Amino acid sequence: MKSRIVLLFAGIVLAGCAGNGDLLKRVNSPERSNVFTVVTTATPPERGFADLTIRASVKTHRTALFPLGNDPHGTSGYQLLVNIDGEPYRISGWPGIEEGFSDTGRNPETGEGIRYLFRAHLRLKAGSHRVIVALPGDRVATQRELRLEERTDNLLEVTPSYYPDRRQLGPGSAGATSFREGISGLELSVNGKPL
Image 1 (cartoon, one colour):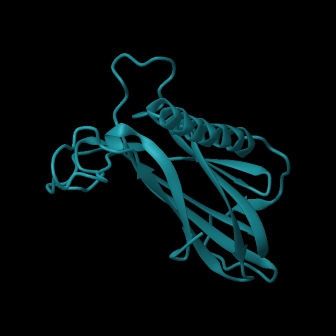
Image 2: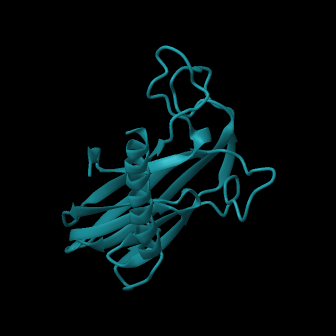
């Protein structure tokens, strides 16, 4: 019975990884161009268009001392990828050392690590769009549909979910997560509403 449960769990995990693999391939594959433009000035969108600001704050571990392969953690090579309707866009976030928080409780970002702040401001046609957001350095990706009303300025926030903290033991530690364990997924919200 235990072996069946283990096999079922392994199948679920592998199915999730396969889904991420497909999205990771698609997020970086240009299918179209001219879907959006990068906005550098503070001008409101004209009729038929909307603005989308993409913002993410992600904490990771430092670069491994003896990395297997090419580990982008702790370097400027760690990027956020966004694909809107088939047009990819790479957003760089410069790494900064973060000491962490004094509260050593259940905050998943407690401890010393590397903080990345990602930000981009895009202009695209108003209407419905398919958006894929990915952190290739952690092999996580998610896809959502969003709708933008014309002449609006919208905020797409990307929030990481972290894996369970293996160092948390004892009563009250169930559900504790930590950035040190890696990023398990991404949650998206537009103007404060989950997608």
